[in-house]
Length: 628
Image (tube, rainbow, N blue to C red):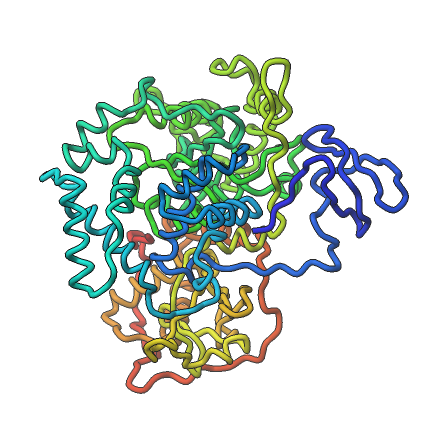
């Protein structure tokens, strides 16, 4: 991930001219000096770049190509060097710390240097992994696995075995595996690194550990500076929206929103008619991290929303949509720590809960509000009074954030969120500011990195995902590729934007770049993953199994005709159409790269695979069809 710092003395480019930063004036302006002419000028902060645009060549690794073992090793290394990041350190202290973990001090220096250059966990991944090697596990790595597993099985158990007995068990397992056992000091060092809370959790009980080591103030720790801690959560919005064609009600949308705990600034949000999912979280996080000038211009909202940058920690609920591997890997890749909200401990989400309450109280002033409960709603007919479309609601909500919420006095911090954020960035008479956050340069890479991952092998006809075939020339060199170590079929990483699955992104492990891969037959229309799920349900209801992509898109065409005829009277179909338009608008705004021109190739159906040529002619409008 390429980032831009705004430290004094940093060299930046504007219109291909090189400048040196003299001073950050505010969140929108910097004072710079022309390197060639020495002329001093003021430039818009968001218009400068890290490199000369004519010479930029970005390469990056995808986190999903790294094995779990190597990723865990990178996280272990980060925990070891954390006490020495961005602090003064003496050689004596480093030597003692290195000895504690059975490392050479030069290794510790190297890890610290590599991590501080990028602030990315991937910099600590063993180098053989980044080269794409698939070789056998090294001896010390095998030993490390045995140490870790034995400590979990023996030491962290209700039997409460001593460190010495744990070491004996490790020695025995190593002998059984015919590898050299570690020293007893190494094992004791690993055990010593386990926190007291973790020991009590496994050797006593999780409840006892939580009671003894919970935060004394009953809250998540308050952020110490901007973007130190961001909380994210979902909620149904207290309003009925209408479709843009018929002006009829289609139900309540969902809101995913993030708050910077330090300043109470809203970091980002995502409004959708689709139920909360990993995708909702990823969209909210992406907006939180990236600059928002372009977004405000697209909605024609006056004002500024000068918050961007990678948060240090995000606080999330324990809901399943937060627990996926894709989210955890993407956050770890970008250096974001995830802090899970304890079950049945609502006070740990206090800031985001209060924010949701505040924003929903404003929504209650809009036509079509459902209010918070039946008693509050009284005789008010929400469906009848509803007039706001989904796009109008998003514009209103953005305007409220930028020009009302961020500027109003917040009782919890005794000033406006916007002012508190500026204090945290620039400092004042009593506090030292953290400085301007780094801006992400390669925005496309960030957006793609948060998309869901699919792993597939590449065949002569391309790659198949959900019975749909994809192909582009960039796949050609990897057709029928094998793993070198065991000659098995090699699988590759593909990213998929759920709003439009007509294009997927292939990560080339050698070139370390993403390449857009379209449908093999580009005459097929773009559809979303939600459309595909509805199509599959439709085919299942018709008792059609083992269908191919021709069956999928034939069913799509038929469903579309049915929906168009029924949209004016069937609420679920109107809701679906608005959701489709909303996804398309958002996907267009993201503007991820796609292949513009390519010859249409009709894929050859596999043998004995039925196509959908004769679907039942008598089909009724499906009011109750469930679209997940």
